[in-house]
Amino acid sequence: YASEASEYTGGPTFELSEEQVGIRDLARSFTANEIIPVAAEYDRTMKYPWEVIKKAHAEGLLNVHVPEEYGGAGLSVMSSSIVSEELAYGCTGIQTAIEANGLASAPLIVAGSDAQKRSYLGRLTEEPLMCAYGVSEPGAGSDVASIKTKATREGDKFVLNGQKCWITNGGCWYFVLAKTDPTAKPHKALSGFIVDASTPGITVENKLINMGQRCSDTRIINFENVVVGKENLLGREGDGFKIAMGAFDITRPLVASGAVGLAQRALAEAAKYAHDRKTFGVPIIQHQAIGTLLAEMAIGVETARNAVWRAACAKDNNDPRTTYLASVAKAYASRVAVTNADKCVQIHGGAGYNTEYPAEKLFRDSKIFELYEGTTQIQNLIVSRVVANDYA
Ligand code: CS8
Ligand code: FAD
Image (cartoon, rainbow, N blue to C red; front, side):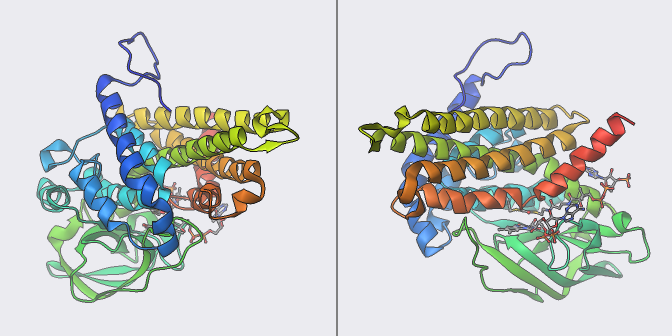
């Protein structure tokens, strides 16, 4: 858990402001009261956590980084990361559903006009509505520039055709990345659109059944001759790739903070069990081998949180190394989530393999952090390009 508030302003500090402590405490008590008691049931039934989301909206814990002028809480990425970590401590399936709204909103925050923001972000803050970020396709996940969905210009309109895959949250509107100029170089060929989910020609396929985070809703969405106006174009034609990437500078630190929340929960569950469970006449926490596992888990949590806060503050301060730091945080925190969940199961012994304890759910839920929002190999690619440049 993060430390308490401090007045210290003498340099790099890891203390939270009074406001951030308040936000953290609100999110923490929401998690304790509204998420933890229902998490196992939502996982078992795979039901969309709509009731929890509605309550989160009422508490102001949804769309937290939507600017205040558009009705949001206007939190910095740093403050938003505190909320994500706390929600993820309770259930990363529920947190992903909540966070996916933040991801869908990010391209609008990066490139939307005032009218687009008022219309689409405003709607989200007025009532609990979900939206989605539609970039990945069956044939293109890591290699975003190779997407095939087309948006063909016809006068003042664009006609969208294609298929998006793995889209989290069905929702009321989508950010859709599509190819507008097949003759341009791949990165200049793409444009970003905001598309109302009710537009004729959109069909949403059945929920995909995943290993973990099973209450989060992931689907294929088809676009067949979907007509949108030019007012639905974000930025200019050809800006889409950079808008889609710019969104990740906001959301990768937030996904990474979700991974920290899961890693912290794994540590807490493992330590609790290690106090309770006795072997060879003593609680297993007294066996040095178990103590070492717990220490490694704590080291992972502390260092991953530092990496997340570094990346989040970089984004808030327009640091030119934001993308690099976001990838460092995402790659590192997701690895810590996976290894902590693994150690949590190990410390539980056979009980860790059983649904009676949260350990097995943490294990299943953790793996996705190394896959979505850019796989670990892609984060490493981004980091390695910067390293190659730094030492050229
Ligand atoms: O393709 C890039 C990439 O990031 N791939 C991974 C895709 C990914 O992360 N997908 C996630 C989908 S969403 C999801 O999973 C949601 S999970 C559910 C919700 C979770 C909520 C909890 C890449 C591989 C990094 C780069 O691709 P390349 O084709 O090699 O392009 P580059 O040469 O790097 O860049 C081309 C131009 O774009 C500019 N660029 C790159 N990054 C940025 C950022 N901001 C602005 N502009 C950017 N971050 C770059 O500078 C190049 O510009 P030029 O002017 O051409 O020089
Ligand atoms: P591929 O790109 O086919 O990669 C396969 C393997 O090759 C991976 O190990 C990858 O790391 C590796 N690889 C690929 N290229 C390289 C390279 N250059 N160097 C080294 N290794 C490489 N997308 C959205 O747009 N919106 C969403 O809301 C969304 N939600 C998701 C929710 C879930 C539960 C899941 C599973 C996915 C979601 N995604 C979403 C898609 C997700 O972002 C992609 O699955 C991810 O980016 C990887 O793409 P891929 O699955 O096509 O794998």
